[in-house]
Length: 70
Image 1 (cartoon, helix red, strand yellow):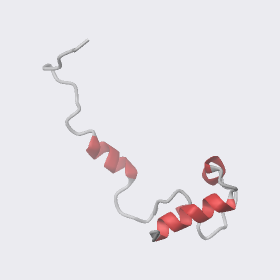
Image 2: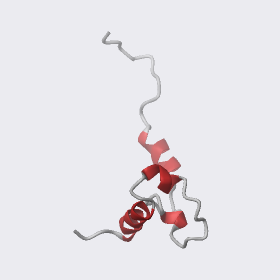
Image 3: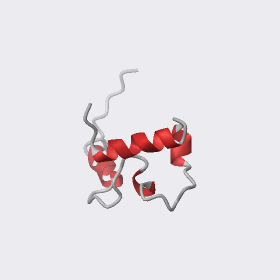
């Protein structure tokens, strides 16, 4: 199985933390060169997750035509 570089980093961090996802999130080794990428994301990439989430909720605003099924 071929991994992307970010997935490979995430896998490495999981191995380093003893396969504990919480330990990866709470990693204290801030001088590690992979620290910023440990969650499988690239902080330097344009377009943050906030803008993706904002775009994905488009069209879900409340409207007067809402019909309850309950």
